[in-house]
Amino acid sequence: MVANKELAQRFPEDFLFGVATAAYQIEGAASEDGRKPSIWDAFSRMPGRVFQQHSGDVACDHYHRWESDLDLIRSLGVDAYRFSIAWPRILPDGRGQVNQKGLDFYDRLIDGMVARGLKVYPTLYHWDLPLMLAGDGGWTARSTAEAFADYADIVVRRLGDRMDALATINEPWCVCHLSHLYGIHAPGEKSPEAFAAAVHTLNLAHGLGVQAARAVRPDLPMGIVLNAHSIYPATDTPQDRAAAERAFEFNNGIFFSPLFQGTYHPDILAAHGPHMNIRDGDLDIIHQPLDWWGLNYYTPLRVAHDPDAADYPQTRTIVPEPGPQLTDIGWEVCEAGLSDLMKDLHGRYPLPDCYITENGACYNDGPVDGVIDDRRRIDYLERHFGAIADARDAGVPVRGYFLWSLMDNFEWAEGYRMRFGIVHVDYDTQIRTLKNSALWYRDLIGAHKAGG
Image 1 (tube, rainbow, N blue to C red):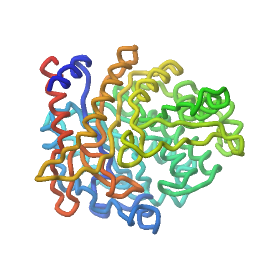
Image 2: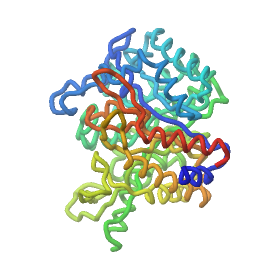
Image 3: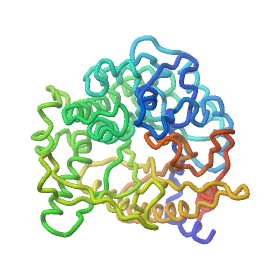
Image 4: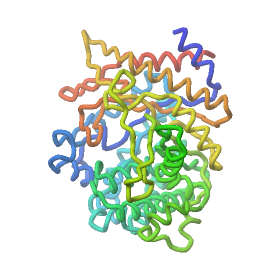
């Protein structure tokens, strides 16, 4: 408790504490009440794509257990809940006929949040693209950006009156790099051309979505959630430092520059411009003034110059050595990466207020005599809260923090074998059990509300 009290005192009275989830990872009910498949429903059925062909068909059954899950969130003492809305529940075909039962579900969910005093922080898109849109080219097709704007309009008209803030898209890097260039996430493409097209479509969808939402509710605080990379050169040589800067532009600047400066870096245009289908006026649409932005951070990226690489950014990633400073998913624990990244980004770009919209760690500790003693996760969280406080002390306007994740869930290509939750889920019984990290977080929030 002493550490919690000291840590809590480093944050201002109005600092927001929350937890986060995403629709496909927790909801289940994949074919109920009019929902049609997303690209992840299809991807998870393809052999070799997801660990043991796990899927989100049932997940944490949140669709049926949302009331008790909201009670659980409330019991942690958090101020806010970040969740995502499933596009295939609202527009099962991606466009056209609206599914009222889908809207009804989020109506009930948001009303339940309001009744429990929880602030409402939805995300419109957390990777579950309606499968029908894939037939048009998915995120490589400009028409998907236009369909996203229509979807944003529908959601905000029905639900926007109770939202405290709205994010357009979660982690464009994952949607573009991980999904269209590296083939790890749905739709599993490995195509530089598809990647380039998806980058511009995602950026354009964000801008059109902001415009659509503000046309309905001009007072709704709008933002986007970016998993920016904290990038370090493998050595201090000029070659590796230059490689790190190229990696920054390729992973971060490719989104931050158009979003916050209305431009693409010349290196990005040289490497990918011919496949981006950039039209007159697009950058003005993308460059919408935002009320806030969200940063998702887990681990740093270390790179070296690769003279043998033909394609920009001509870098190779340094894979961390196995050891105690890795989480169970193999990611390096480096809290300095978080504070360094926030300071760097706010120095480079004219950014609005920031929220840490995801941060947490994968440790697969199970129950022993009914107790889940995930002390490694607690250590990770303590260190990263310290890093956030350091960034705030340096002048970065960080206004809140959403812990990833509320509960163990479908971890995309890793299926159910990787656990990020502060609440343990027994997938056979759907029983939720608070891990020690949940008790730690509850105590930290309690100490903060008590004045440190």
